[in-house]
Amino acid sequence: MSLNRPDVRVYGQVRLADAAAVARLSDALPDEASTVDGHTLEIDFQGFYIDVEPFLELAAQLMRPGDSGHMDHFDDEHGVLTRYDLHPGGHESKSHRYDDILEHTKNEGNR
Image 1 (tube, rainbow, N blue to C red):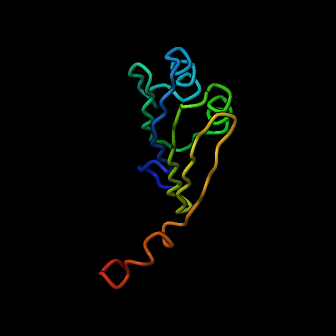
Image 2 (cartoon, rainbow, N blue to C red):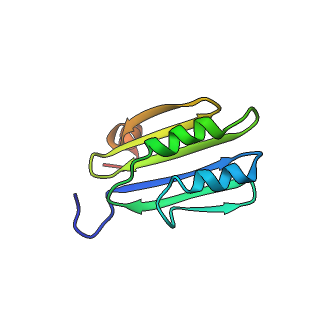
Image 3 (cartoon, rainbow, N blue to C red):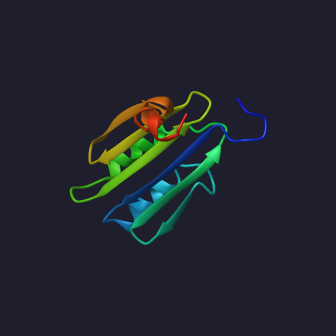
């Protein structure tokens, strides 16, 4: 854990046909972690901890066919990025260590 820098960053976007559902979904995130613009929820959070499970569960319940969304969770303390692709009824996630993401660029000066 760093002393002056957030350990967790979360970014994403969710588009739902039901604007009321967007507002409900926003409530599942910490205050000031999201903004609502009509049918779109923009996620922008930096802090030391966030439990994304309640948000993911609610998104699965609220999303309908045609809705879309994703969320990227950067765990800087452990060097892991997890991408959540959201869809009605659930989500799929894939995690990568930061070092693995950058591995292919080592010969290009990234060390």
